[in-house]
Amino acid sequence: AQSVAQPEDQVNVAEGNPLTVKCTYSVSGNPYLFWYVQYPNRGLQFLLKYITGDNLVKGSYGFEAEFNKSQTSFHLKKPSALVSDSALYFCAVRPQYNFNKFYFGSGTKLNVKP
Amino acid sequence: ETGVTQTPRHLVMGMTNKKSLKCEQHLGHNAMYWYKQSAKKPLELMFVYNFKEQTENNSVPSRFSPECPNSSHLFLHLHTLQPEDSALYLCASSQDRGSAGLGGTEAFFGQGTRLTVV
Image (cartoon, rainbow over the protein chains, first blue to last red):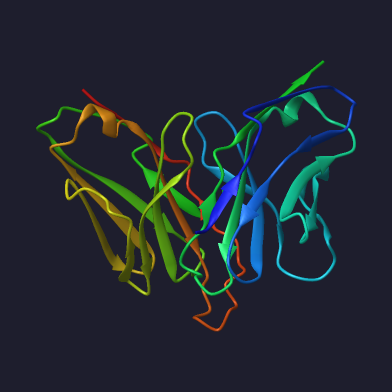
């Protein structure tokens, strides 16, 4: 079965500190992996994706994510958090041979304190 | 602005009402999706359309009826809903290149319709 797990409901970090939002996945075949961010009462905004190639991918707003095949993880990172990064973050996986579906995690609420 | 527009943004309806949600994408994509987002639950995929044809119905109750007249428009017709159907309904689109394993493109989401069933 295909699934995505975000083990933390909430992550708290001080402004200026590095942040990590965790994601692990289970999917058949090679995964296509995505991170999205959602602000209150808004739709999801695409941040970055991993399709193939370099395991470290860079995305919008200074975010990056590292694909680790052996650990089936795709953690989202940022070297220095901003208060404006506070939002709900979703990890998603799209199976290589089931392109009709995006499987989303339950989301992680990121709180960045000044 | 992502190129995916949903209307209305907010909707309050009674359990005996009939209403429709509308989604329009200006990206030239060939796949469109309806998702339901409830508090503290993963996004639930409801329906998928590819080239106007429904390719996925994720065991959605018949009180939700999708319609896709063309690749740019997607509707969700609602009737005799229950209070537990209150949620944020999100539309998304993507460009799918077929079953050749090239489905790597991201989905673009609309702002959502906040539905409250009273």
